[in-house]
Length: 421
Image 1 (cartoon, helix red, strand yellow):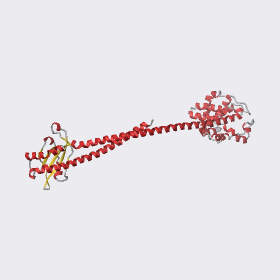
Image 2 (cartoon, one colour):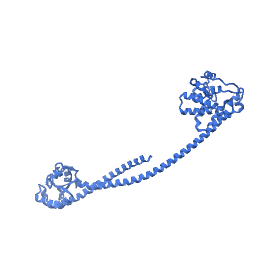
Image 3 (cartoon, helix red, strand yellow):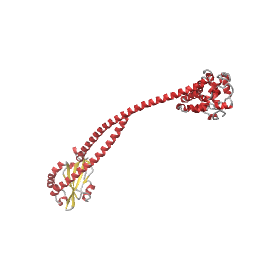
Image 4 (tube, rainbow, N blue to C red):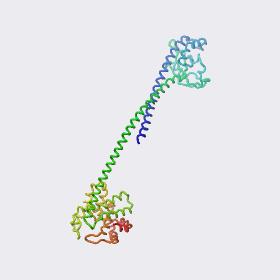
């Protein structure tokens, strides 16, 4: 589905590149053709002056207006050249910058430029082409036409005696060049269109290939995720089996882990923890005593009071538990909670002896849930506590064993906790 923006982007950039290339190429060719046209015009002008003007005039003719007879003779000699090159008018100017002959008054609306004339008279350049200007003073159909003046010196004995000014319509210079530019533009556009269509086809095929590869990768990803889920489920089922095995070793504690998990969830919801944290705490409650699988039966199920040595063995079960669960990736965040669920708020717990809010929140929640269920369950060495007595005991040990703020929250839900079985 991404191929369309890609193709559009490619089309825009390609079009921009082709247009820019076409403009630059057109300008270069236009300038070259125009210069060739003007160069050709210079040669024509020089030949026209030598054959049609100088042969019919003498130096003395440049002192005043040329007679009608000589003007007619000059015009008859160059009429073919004017028609061939579409020259609109011819003007002769003497050294005093006076017009001594003009064949077409319509094209003399603007006097010859003094600076251009001076360049010719001073022999700074052999040939001058003026900028185009409009015949605003001309009549009828000639009004507003763009004209270019071409200045060529008339030289006798090495001295400039006068200047011939040929007036030519600008379009005669530019039309040919414009035609070439149009051909170039059409060629560039055609080339762009062909190249674009070819590359669009390549892009389309490439995008289809990428889409197919992407689909394969998505399918492979789904298969991998399914395999990982099965692996996690297998781990989870194994851990559940171990947890159930621990409870099964002692009929007095059967269902203990599940009840602790439920009580911890009630507390967590009252604290408005996130769904993610609720799930973590649920698993922590289910597996908090899994380390007891590594505790010998004669210690775990002893009817009487444990010796100091036996108690030290019991205190190892949180560490044993996290060692068992350490290879289950999705249970990684439960490990600190399980490790510290026997810590005391005053710092007298195990295995690390940390205190207060150094103890993870999940461990502090689990401690209340674990203690409540342990007190309300029959044990070999004592009868179960009533619900009210267990709640009173938890309140009694607030601040020393439990987080007093969490005890306050527990008191809000204790009637609900009573119904958990």
